[in-house]
Amino acid sequence: MKNTSRLGKMPTWQRHFVLIAMLGCSLTGTAYLLGHQFHIERAVLGAHSVLIWHGIAAMAATMALGSVLPFHLKAGLKSRRKLWSGLSQLAFLTTLLVSGALLYYGPEEMRDRVIATHWMTGIAFFAIFLLHGVYVKKID
Image (cartoon, rainbow, N blue to C red; front, top):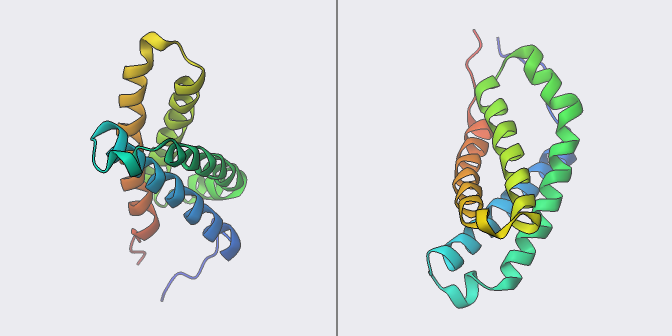
């Protein structure tokens, strides 16, 4: 018999908000990374406007994170389903929030290390986010 428990499942509107916000942030960040750091289509992908969109998407992603913390995270901890990917996402998002703040407000002498930390963490987060969304643990 299939487990039909709704414990920890987000309402449809919230799921769409989280998906759009996280994907938007990840895709704009990836675009800027390719253009600015790796000089691929730099005039387009590395443009300041892409960075602005990334910042706006990051604000939406932060709101999405806040929307899942009270219920989804609590239910996930209780059920222990997708625990590794869920806690990994939380750790990566925390690192992204701190490194993003340091990119804007931090000292110039640590900027290059923070940039590297931010984009490497962002790639890891995106992979775990996709895994968390599609991985279904078999329940017998």
